[in-house]
Image (tube, rainbow, N blue to C red; front, top):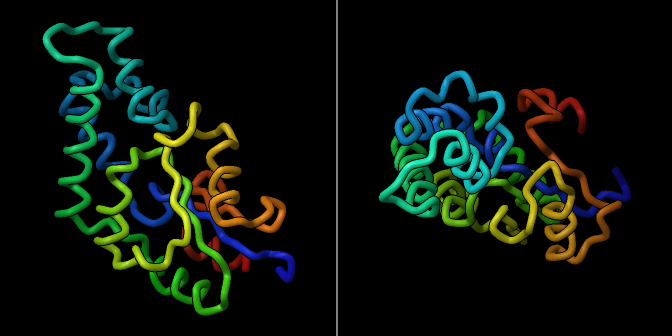
Amino acid sequence: MDQVKAVIFDMDGVLIDSEKFWKQAESEVFTSLDEFTALTQSMTTKEVTQFWYERFPWSGLTLQAVEEQVVQRVMELIKTENCEMKGIKAFIESLHKSGLKIGLATNSPAIIIPVVLNKLGLDHYFDAVTSADDVPKGKPDPEIYLLTANKLRINPSECIVIEDSCFKTMSNILDFF
């Protein structure tokens, strides 16, 4: 831990429990979604929209307009529902107090980030944020993490990434430390 200078967080599944919101929004926008949910779970919103368009092409709306419908619905749900991951605020506050830099690297569109950080009261703790909008390929491609480390001005080898695919509960994260 002595060599760690920064912690980079994923957002969906780490800061907020939003998977159900994405499923709900996609289900509302793309009917008959359930059989493909596992396939689209790790995709960016743009990739999900393209996925559905390739399988069930529509007319009248652009891919961007449909993507915006999904994102707007997710933002509504984040604003109105309880979605904070238990213990995350106290954990980030303690990291901040310890002097570590804090970053965010999310596959979500940039427009959602302030909605989440403001809702959780965490916006002033993050030294750098990066969304899938900032890189050519979303996760699991490592570029989003490398860009975030660069924004933090920290060598990637001196960063810890907290990603929901690695930790399933906050207690798992705290046990790691």
